[in-house]
Image (cartoon, rainbow, N blue to C red; front, side, top):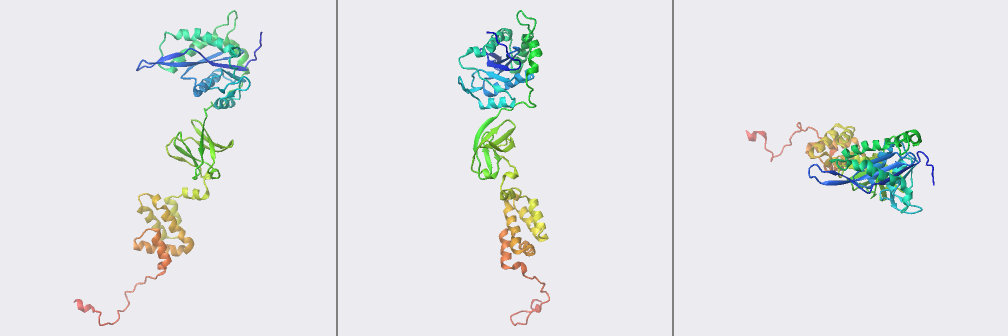
Length: 381
């Protein structure tokens, strides 16, 4: 029966059965390419692209390229039951691939998979494929291409001729019909293109980080989630972390192996304090206690090959001010410097023994007592 098809309503999607190929310039090896075809139902305006495979990323990229080719988004996408689009086919409730569904949500359109074993559901795209064999495949059969980009340039030129060719017995073409009745009915494109999302699972470690195995990198999460199983959603640029459908962390993706990407707010207060350790911080802290203490801390830091090796010693020394006071600690640092001993244990011992309070007076004027066993200065003349 005759059916009226609403403009801007559906885009039918499929791959051709036949394949094109490119030739490796160095080895002469033939590499087969899949051919993606889609067609708007009302105007029959057609898009064709060669791609490496029918896998998810290639399928989504081709579908997205077609939307930008049309300059708008139809109300629904109608794919065949290929695995990249439908993970479980069903006559009533097919299960759409999670990533493809997310792609459709990004473009604010619906997915209506065709019924299995019902060729009439996709008759229009199958007829388009037959025409493409004649108007695209045939002219390319005697040409040699060395890259996918080159063959797609040739396909685009032939596609323009195909879309501009008048329908048999009509004065209008697919292109003129598209411009007249369909382009204005398409929904607007989003500002940004879609980024393919991937999924992974992880456990939040005790240091408030998860390990992302694909990049061998660590990302921080709020410390209250320590020990939980979380879901990672990642693209080429970002990593999002979810727990029970709640997103509680998002990071710019970093591919540095065994590196850490950390937000200070995600860490417990004591961890945050440790992460902020630095030579400058300890020196400034010691300067508030006294000049001798500052010099002593600088000496401890310079003594080690790497400053971080002495951070705990510095922290121990500076914390002694809470128990003994700033003045006594400054005096103890002076005494320890005179001994040439630069470590926490020495300063603590001086304070415990009270050596910092011993008055070192100059006793040059003290008279030597008389004693028969003490030789006088004349003895050495």
